[in-house]
Length: 113
Image (cartoon, rainbow, N blue to C red; front, side, top):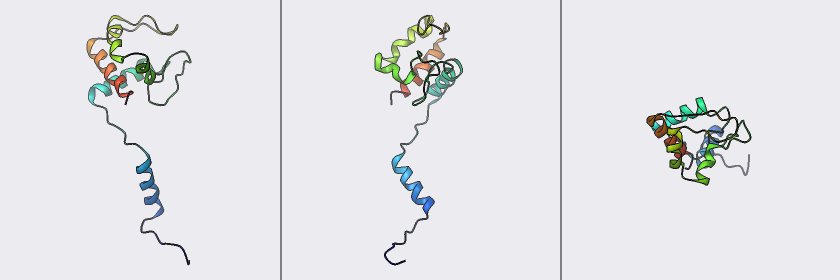
């Protein structure tokens, strides 16, 4: 094996080191953000993409990760509290309590990172 250098790590360790350098660390959600994620998964994911890379199951339903590009997501608080009656044509009406509003907004803010 002339000309080959022996590496001190095994192949698995080398691959792991490469992946650690390439993959960004996943940020943990605080309790409010986690509750918001749980809410949108249960109530919104049938139509909307609620994650950072998924596609919306319903083409006309915007991915939540894109909302902040159109306006500050904090601006949704009043609509969530009073009841969203617009959106895509098949969107059900929602009216969230103040805690749910805060949780959903907190989660939507994580999609801006």
